Length: 97
View 1: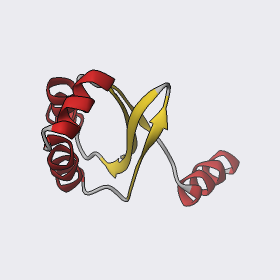
View 2: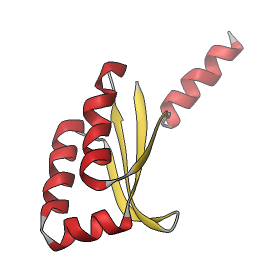
View 3: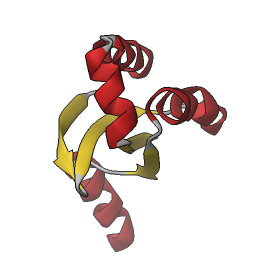
């Protein structure tokens, strides 16, 4: 299932991760693990955010995905199902049948 993960990083923790050089390593590790179809980074909700769209085959992956954000960056996260335009068309077409 295609999902979107949005992480809002704790400012103080992520400041330290920038200063000590671990933030790029954490983001690279997460990106390699998720193999996202899209990844975006920028400000949001008053802090630093990272947004990933990726395929999550099994919900049992949630702990291994979420814990690095919690433990290493003090982040608040949300994971929710999302659709691209093709998925939406397919879903709406099923309503007609």
